[in-house]
Image (cartoon, rainbow, N blue to C red):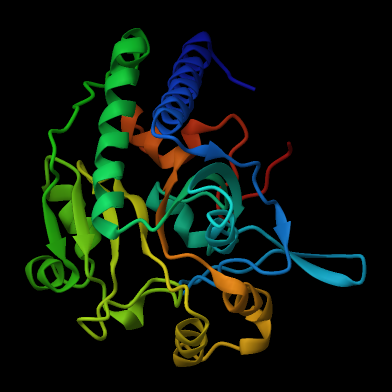
Length: 304
């Protein structure tokens, strides 16, 4: 599988760091009172996503089942039972083949998905900052030898992280502001207040500022791109229905979600953070594929 001892040692170091990242993430969230859920692999409904990603669908028991693209709807339902939940959720997103060149994309990856009942965007931003600082500090302490072998001097950022609104970032850095901003900053940075027409229907519109969403993305520094994405959720059935219609989606595809909302979804907020992207940043790797033994790179076939 590997052609040299040096390659084996490099891969082993990356996998050790990845294991520590998962351990530190789980430790932090359990100490914060979160309950871990087993992931949902297939469902009759999954995240619609606005960008160019195909769905993977299987047939079973007379119906069509989607391989999970994110656990967004299951998270919203789960906080009806437990106030704080998380899951290490495998995601399948059939990305365009040319995305393999970004260094950031796999079409099979693991997302740490979490949700908080009655949570606000500001509370989740605070949680996300403390989460990242904890994980980076823990890995730096426990995996110093592996980081040294990888030539990585891992910075641990100070809180609070700076924040730009979507429109501020676009004015300063142009249409592809996420790439340019990530390349220029020396600390993680938030992007907030996305306009309603660039995000999913489940991101909550600010009732005081029509057209502006109560959501956020966190970008890594050093050009590593998006770290996490999330925000507050639409939970009222009439709001969910209106947002689905505004996006031109078929209401019939979301009857399961609407039925849950009619029964009563609680207000909530949450985010997802890609584990492979986090490990890539921690290790300072050129491509996220290096974080896995058996990576699924867009457009490439694999023997195992």
